[in-house]
Length: 195
Image 1: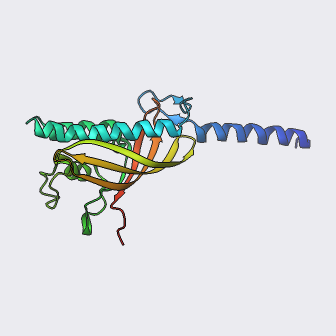
Image 2 (image 1 turned 180 degrees about the horizontal axis):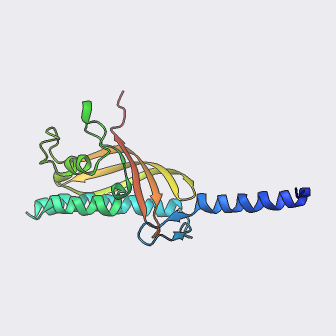
């Protein structure tokens, strides 16, 4: 039986630890079967702010399509595909005006119904984005950032075509994908408490 000295054991443990760390931090690319490391672009508060401003404009674009007699449902599909991470699994989506058994919308269909309605499986949805909203802004943005994941809270104020506004408290969770895009994996929205 061969006996190893302590430095040999340390070398073996270090080698195994490095291999394990690589496997834990690498992402499998299911299209090529290759492993790629996480994107080099770090998530910053500025990138999160840009992502939220883009989300506001995307929401506005759904209502604009509806107001112009264009296909708002198709536009909502584009918004969900471009900004959310439904393609890779469940998104924890809790919209502002949902209740009962349909409060939480972890599926693409549930989120789509909330934005544009027209789905008999979600009979209480009238299409939140169809109002339409014409503009929006955000403030009080704060975020927790850890590697390729971030959680952000802000107030988003939406302005409707008639000049009325609504402010909602938002919590967004983001996952940075292999192309460096911030994908929404959590979307929680509620109306501010009014004592």
